Amino acid sequence: MPARALIVAIENYPNIVDFAKVLPGTHDSAKKFLSWVKSSTKFANIPAAEEPQRIIICSDDPAFPGRTHGANAQDIRMALDALERLGRQLTSAMMKGTEATQKAD
Image 1 (cartoon, one colour):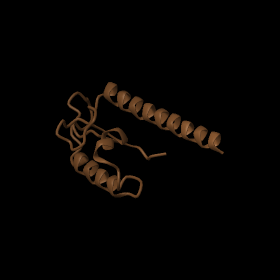
Image 2: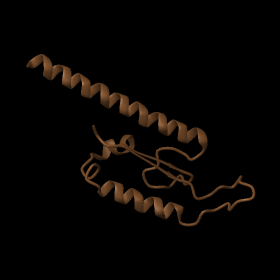
Image 3: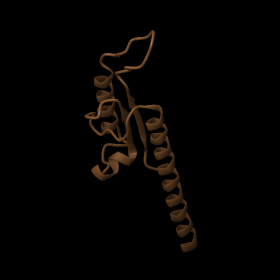
Image 4: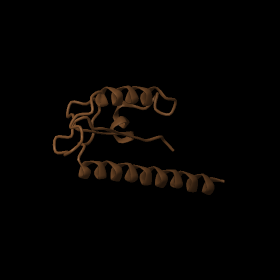
């Protein structure tokens, strides 16, 4: 089954009280992590068209490379739903392939 990843990069927390409103370097760290994910064996050769479905990125920065979702609670839930949906689709496709192979035997 193809690998999937979820990256959450939230650097700015404008509405938080009694804590730091900015976590400096979070976006830079997430970009480094994204680079590492893309270079890993499971992601190294994925077609560009598949990347947004297999590497889900939630960020408070709309310009974050590869961003697929925002970073509020609802956006992150939607990202998790997308990962689950893809997993279900891949499992279904894999099962259909297994059934076809069994019928051919």
